[in-house]
Image (cartoon, rainbow, N blue to C red; front, side, top):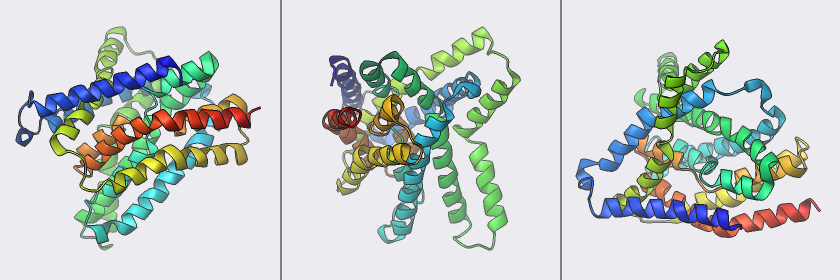
Length: 326
């Protein structure tokens, strides 16, 4: 692993450690005041929507490498849905929150594609590889959070309906409304509508959105540390370790198999999609967990453990890819 990537990992862990210190020293108040949740709501309702709207509004759909995008997202979303279905089937016997299956699904699927992924792609694959990585990153959050939001809102609507099918129409309408009028989905739809006009964002508006969106990454990293300080690790690390293994080992292997065997990817595009799949869990997963008040301690643990374990798994995947392309 290059020095630049190691430095980036160290910076991430130091920001998490700063958040932990903020929580332990109660600089923002006691746990009862829920300062971490206040900051999480600020990220979810103010900063992340600005980032999603600006990203979508500036996205050039025609220039995206759609075959490569499909080669990545088909297996990732497939694993996400399988994981969700398995968790949903087992949820009742473990008395987990309604949102738990969707939270675990997004925790496995969503990688740290910006803070770690961008320097990794630049350092390993150069400018061409970084361009391919950024093309995937441009729709990464949009696709995965849209799927996760739909799943969790469907589960919540089903729970509100008492688990029956008598109010199926009402349940589906409620799911559709809550999915569309949502701090993740609505900015994406609005950004797509703006992009369809072919007009650039006005300079002052673009500047405001850029400043707001730039707060998402440091805020979410700080929240990981604060959540760890307030809630600690879960009583059992079995769930967190299992999700970490899925994220760092199973998902990249699945993406490799599908991208090469089904979509015929090879060379640099194949390396880029596999490395993106092998990244540790991203901070948006914790933001999602805090939004729905489900498995926050476990998601925090996955973020920390997968980032630390990535120091060992990243060189292994890079070595395998190098030997495969000789």
